[in-house]
View 1 (cartoon, helix red, strand yellow):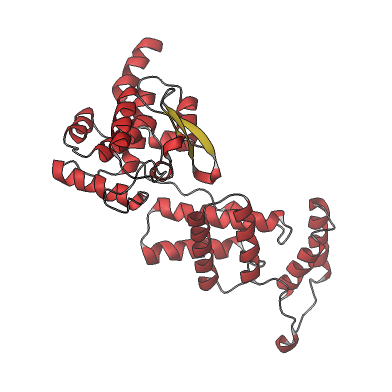
View 2 (spheres, helix red, strand yellow):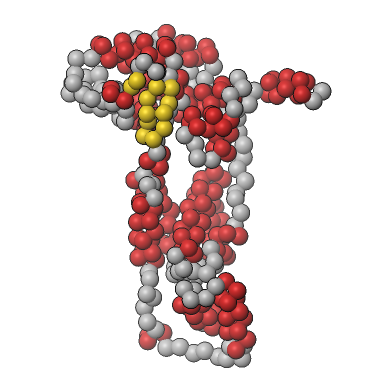
Length: 330
């Protein structure tokens, strides 16, 4: 109870004192209360000014203003609500030990991957960092919980043969245009389905996509993609402004699930494993770096904020590493 009282006093003084003064206040309170016994009547304790729910609501509003997508916001909220349900303590009083125990118990209970667990850690850190910046708490308790080491696996890409087989055996103009656009531009499938006909600049073989974090960026496609896109658009009889639509009336805008289903079906027909939209993006990044494209340019092409993310997409050809070693070092 004594520690909770000191913590409450510290939180109330956060807006008025700097870090050095706060540390001095904390030492003084501990010194003065060393031999003091505190007894409280729990029935008369005032309710917390801010509940976990109210703080979560404010945090979500802040993230919404920052431009996070609905999908990201839902994921943030889901992760934090699970924390609240498993750790029945006000977030204003949560310690590093609470968070660390929760992550350990969650990993044991769900058997989730290290990558998934680190994503949860990052979301918790974001939330508690926000609490710290907004002066609700003195220090982010997740700060002492370091990044969880993730097992590095070789990311699969499409071989040249697989790409050509998909093109040769794709008898639908729309699906052929989709494959070529994904393969040559490296855009996300979510970016692809949001494109309209008017977004395509055929003369310069480029278009502007609306990506993650509500960010726009230019992407580029090759001559083959230009031809197949034009053939597909010339074959259409509908007036839907969407670049890609369903094959049957009423020709609605194609959704992400529609693209994924068509590609999986094509992969099963050809015996090509794990055919999905994201694999085209990874293949482009790998080939670009393998052929000597500067990593910073690949980063801009893919629309990544952090260059580390770009490196996770790409698989460097070990044979080229050996050639470079012989050229520059041996």
